Length: 85
Image (cartoon, rainbow, N blue to C red; front, side, top):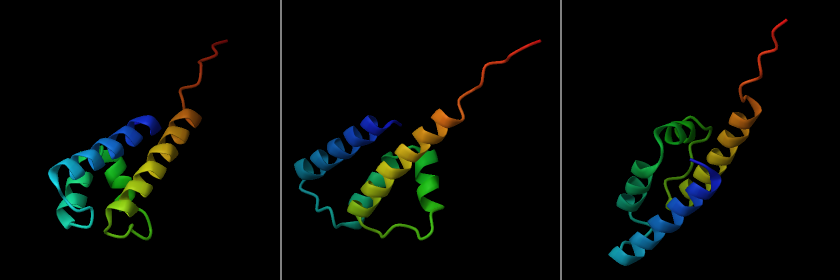
């Protein structure tokens, strides 16, 4: 899940909330948001200290940060070329 993909997910999720008439403050809204995250990103968020507040805004923000962090890690640890002798 790249930065633009998480941005699209958040925008689409908020659009669907509005279309369904759901309030962002409802626990069900946050539950559904979490269910749509990639498992790896969801796990990384749960392992953070402290765990983010149980609000949709907090989870959207930290999800975006974790996706960017993971992209940086992936780019930094990309496979190195093998240099044989």
